[in-house]
Length: 486
Ligand SMILES: Cc1cc2nc3c(=O)[nH]c(=O)nc-3n(C[C@H](O)[C@H](O)[C@H](O)COP(=O)(O)OP(=O)(O)OC[C@H]3O[C@@H](n4cnc5c(N)ncnc54)[C@H](O)[C@@H]3O)c2cc1C
Image (cartoon, rainbow, N blue to C red):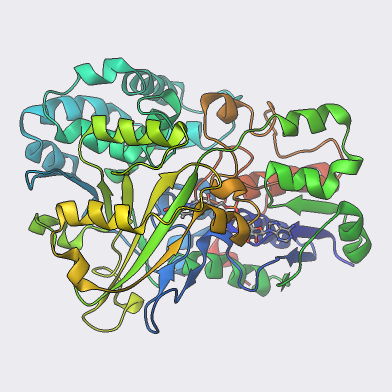
């Protein structure tokens, strides 16, 4: 018997589990895979000695997430913050480089520097308010209304054709489009601009840290705290139904780190029909095709400044990114896709044998795609790093269809567990200030199908667990800090 049970050991499930255990409850986690971590697993996908991130690799929220701040993630593992958050190479060998230092970024952007500063400086001055606003359900009075207003204005500009009026050169608009395309969708649109301006601001605030030991280290830090507080993780255990869950654990709290469709599968027979209809209307977005590389040495970037950059957006101009995202939305596979690249090796020697490197990359593809995009991805890398093919020792592709099989939360390969549109930021998966609560007493949804949505931040699980603790046991949110670790 347990007080609470969590289904799914992704970052949200683990955040929920930690919170429930820290409140003094006996907690069990059921995970269907043989390895914990969900979207934060790392594994030897290519050759022995090469450690690849299977899903997430780029972690702006590891420092910025209010959950990770409360949990003290940076004190529990090594998060190395590079001087450059991300870079966006162009065909002539130039690159837009987002240094943590806004002044340096502005200086290198030349004639567009001042316009870039006017966009980001007011956001940077209110970065905590913007994080608070974007990392909660939208249906809530913002803690810092000035921050929310500035952010909304910037999103309205960059999410529309007005965005084209700000800059004269190619680098700055390409940088903003590149960071916006982390959220799959139309460029420009309010939803993608929202993600881009948050990530773009964080690039000049705490930065985009590289987790030493790979993304798995983030999951392991949460699992260690959970175990230290009496929690139990059961791997290789698929939960099929609510009845099964109740019979196996007798828990008063059942918290699911599954997609909105997963909630329907597990609890569908017991949910009221209105709620079922609402979950059925929840939409999933395009998928991702990922290619991991084991390299004999560094990538031969044309621009030498890129050698130690941990995150790169390979796609050329803003217009090219908009075209490739539109093709994906129309069900096509772009010949020149937007490619997101993570190059952790210069910051983390533990990922590959001495002198060698790993490279992580993915591009967007239509939902359910079985197409291997390796060649298109390699061509995009070669475009900015001629000779790249010569340093590739091995590669491993994971298609969108394979992702859907790998993790049932990734419906059709949509790793956001639900399309990120303005509608679905409001209604995730229902319109509510507490969207983690279901109509069944004791049953909560805490995955990225709920607000505030995708990314490794643990917030959906943390908020769901806080809601459950209050509803079911009348308990306040517990302290999660490392000083209370045991
Ligand atoms: C290719 C790729 C690249 C990404 N890049 C980034 C990135 O760079 N930065 C970033 O922040 N995010 C990135 N993401 C997204 C990020 O991984 C997710 O937003 C995040 O993992 C969501 O966390 P979660 O806990 O909600 O769900 P998940 O991490 O998906 O975890 C859900 C867990 O529940 C388990 N589960 C599901 N159903 C059941 C069941 N019935 N019974 C038992 N267990 C079950 C699954 O096996 C899984 O372990 C990426 C994802 C992918 C696939």
